Image (cartoon, rainbow, N blue to C red; front, top):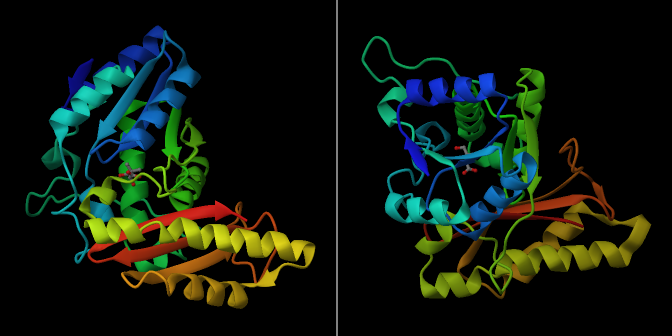
Length: 289
Ligand code: PAF
């Protein structure tokens, strides 16, 4: 496995692959890799085959964190990431140099951002107003640096995948977006780099996300075609959370999985997403109802 840090070096290599007709898949990550990321690597390999190359980027992107969010506390362990990448058959680990990604020199600071305007407005975008602008900006930069044919994202970040897909279409990036299923712990908690920050009491109550989503699914399935109102399901979610005093609900949302337009009447096939805080840690999950 090779490790590339320089942006010019990455772009040179990407052009070389392009000239040689080598298929390239990108798995963008913020590091502190877990089973979920490794499943994205497997999916990437399936797409490009043994003769293609899988690039995994590790970059804790500062522009997607708000001023009061956990950028400084985001878990990092590059040594471990290297080992996991090697074991998973990653060809190139791209660890872009932060100072080069976002020039900060006074008077010539980075000042170009990519913003999707519609799908990023609600849910995560409402709770974290500059988050998706940071995600679309860094993903556009990574596409220009790695020149992949395909990029693989996780379904846990449902809205992110929709926003990235829209940005890719709107800006004509020649990249296919693949979304791979969420990988879960045994009790159903979605794998996330942030899970390590939970205390043991918080970790025990983190199963609440899954329990709420499954209760919502049961309620919607039982109601069938008539569905339930979003208001009634919101109350059901709050009621389920009463058993988990450490869990604070940020939002629960019901929406069309393609357009992300909120559903007032929630029927089977609608998507539900929720965000909660446990202590200092914010977790999200989603489910097709
Ligand atoms: O999902 C993530 O880890 C990040 O948002 C991404 C896509 C790597 C962009 O920084």
